[in-house]
Length: 406
Length: 89
Image (tube, rainbow over all chains, first blue to last red; front, side, top):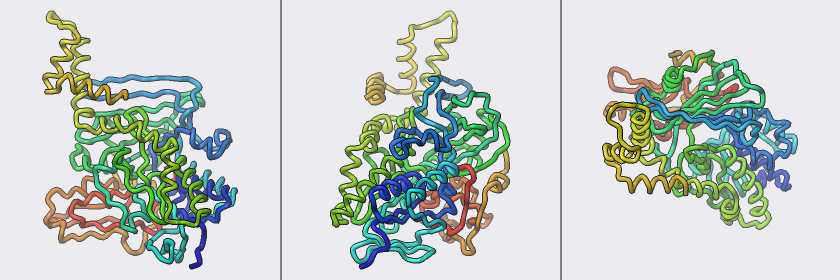
């Protein structure tokens, strides 16, 4: 059977483009299919990229890429009713992560890929996928394409895996991200930027809100699990507006967007490979949330690059069933190592007490601490009393603390 | 609150001739909570007085939520050929 390419990549976002760039550098014959008119047309992201992987993909990216601001300040805000715990951490001149706007960023990365010789077919939508003649055939709105190896980089909905019956989605393993871009006079020097993470301000939802400082805009939004959306005090269509009002952000809205986000955790990841097929980025469920860092973009670039390198090995071996090569390479990389490292805290975040009970206990204890009256107890007695009030034994707190630092 | 349609109007849409979302409204009649009406960020699903659902497929933000929000499998979703384009992302 004749094939149209060594590898077809479905999806021209971060993982697909990183896979494409790497595979072309490895000398493979690659076609990338992107359903948008341009890369980034369909992409939505909170808007922060940890850039270690990008620097590996494009060594001079810091000078060339359309990044917004380096994140030099992190602020956490935990609301419990009319009380709020806030803490911030600042590190000037830090250039470990940047705010980004994906419609700009992905378009730039696609042009870099095209300059390297990657063939990108835009406005190309995959309608169906099936196995045939030792490869996979993709039916698209522009005709049929076949390859012995497909990289599914189509995002959380994993188009090719889904069409081959290799995915089952559930609302607890997906989050909805909703976001607005707000025009703003950002009173910060060019080399400074802030990320605010806000928890507990909208009741009923499992998740939180964020504000990212871009050059002259703010990205304001929420990420909450789909199964908690019907329990939220606001319907999904009003979520960002309500959140913005609560945290008192005003300004001209430039864009309203939404996207599903994978929320599996290391031990619940979906299948990452099958015969003739590998998944990268969101399509593989690669998202890390350890309570302090929420990452998907560096994992997308990292897994995309590994997918490109693995493709070369698979093509050379001429054994297209042996896609486990990709998994073995992922295991040796930061992608699966970091996902595994984060799993304890990921589990902790998902336990019902973490988002609701613990913040309230902490607020109660702090409130007692800052209230001076005739009757006053020691801090430890107060902590034990407040825990008892919520029916949480001290041993569980110790176990949870251990999980948080392990 | 800025109305939803005003916010959606900021995006560029290239709406397909044929709806990319199909709903089995006979199933919806028996669904009391109608989680789709609460979980869709584009207000695509609207509850009608007769218990059925109206689908405004042209508003769709293509988040993918349709693949998980209906507990009864009443929603069939495929990505549109045209659909939304974001300027900022």
